[in-house]
Length: 465
Image (cartoon, rainbow, N blue to C red; front, side, top):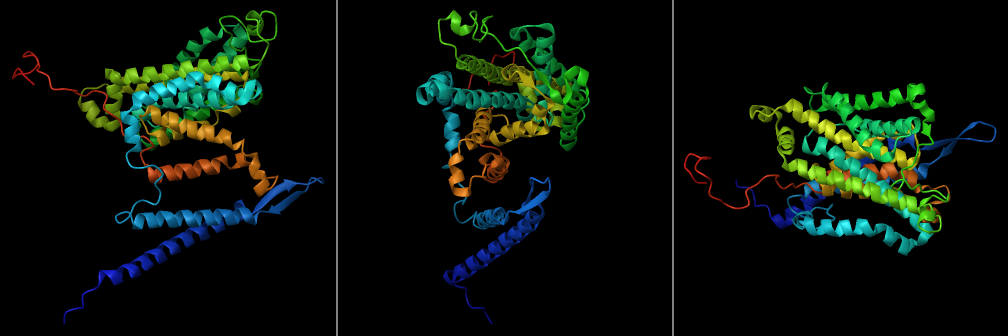
């Protein structure tokens, strides 16, 4: 006996109900797991009272927020997977082809971005005033550009050569301590020590490259992570050399072609007949790190079009095929590690000169994780992607300091900066779901034939191409 035909119009609501029920069930399970994890971690906060007694403060409101956020997020993810073939994505923030359009007009955007970067101090002074511009130029301009430069340096190793490096902060530390020790003990100029710091960092990059020539994937990541921790522990325990946890203070600041930025009669302001202000040194440092970042971008673009750059990309795609083509993978890996480390050393020397004080606490593993996240989230191999990710991550963290008005909603004890890692992790999850290969995942080839041309007879057998 034949079965009656099923009416699609009547089957769709039942299927949708089953899908929704399964999604709610999975989201509820995720919320239950979150609730169980939050009880020993978030449900109670510890503090010491006036009698030096440990007191537990209940924080069930935070637990409730965490459970609700996980439930809603998991529900949206499950519904998105269920209806991927029938409806548009629920997590879509930009129209399709936005980044493709951005990449096609990259030259126009590059000129616009360069113009904005050059005029940023002037814009900040006009908008925030002479006193308020210091915070925007230093905390946003200089700080973001440091991480942009670090992201572009690591992009050579991870994005172009495909070598996972979890210890990049070690080269950052080598550059910083090289400048600090040589400047303080020998009185050398910043302009002499800047290239020296890069060269020393490149040397340590080659030392790291030799032991990992035969390693790939997870094993390479573990060794590079260990290298970064070894450098940090050496700086902590070799007190006579690095000062240990106390660090190095009184590091000489860079000068403007021999003119210091101080309030003396031979200072920058007095030489040019200006009223003394610390803003002059900040503007000088801003343009200095801008020049270093642009130098990093220029060298990366030029190297990518050279044979060594194409060898990096061949190594990233398939190391076995790279060897079969006769490419020396040993020198290819070493050049990637050394050149990427060199730019990390440049950034470290600038960081040391800017701060005037450094300690091992500035070069922990979290710094390497942030720099690697900038490269991955922006799109491995993309300079624009790294820049956008650095602006979003570092600039977003700095913007959290400006959200004091949220205390009127969540109470005076609410500190937005405490939630920066939570927001950072949530952003990584969203990006990995929405754009698994990063914000700018498409890369144009380094070498391609723009038009068909006739080839000389001595190059091909047929005499034409």
